[in-house]
Length: 253
Image (tube, rainbow, N blue to C red):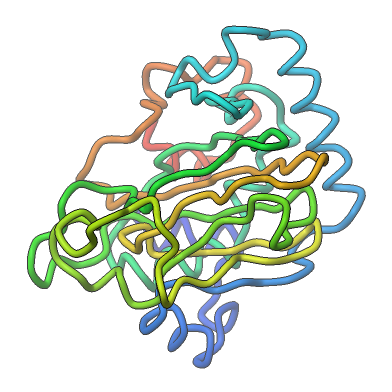
């Protein structure tokens, strides 16, 4: 199977991302889509995530990394078919195909919950130092399971920064400080932000007393390694429930 055949089998068509949305992805580096998934899906995802946090305890997130002030989960492809519609979402796949422009695969599917009073991150990119004119290698998507508001620790992103070479530290004196052009990703549960993950971004502090749970589903140019190596991690009981196209996206066949 090739990339185009896999995308077609997964329901990805050219009209899933409009010309206006493509323009925003190309120039600003991100796109916020409200109501991409419904409340019942939000509730099912949260229920499974909370069960995993209870089950895994202090081990939660260890497959990738843990972070003070947050609850993390990793390797979610293998931890419930409830997560499958996330990493196989046709609109997100269409945006990833537009941005990367090359055959790609799943990079990772993780979860993050910024706890009250916590969650601040320095501006960073989800890739190493970008070389001059380097194309997009990685696309991430942020699935909002709780409201993302100015007080709940919403992700900030710097429009257009995906085109800058190097790292944020090469351009800024203080990567922890607010950036003058940063935008907050805001939305109700069910909203998804898709972004060129070379763009500078980072979580802000959760000033509320509420959860700020989110899924992070990323895709990478097929020529590069995955954050979660699915050939190492994929369980047989998961494999048997996946289509050929889904397994192609995981790069396990």
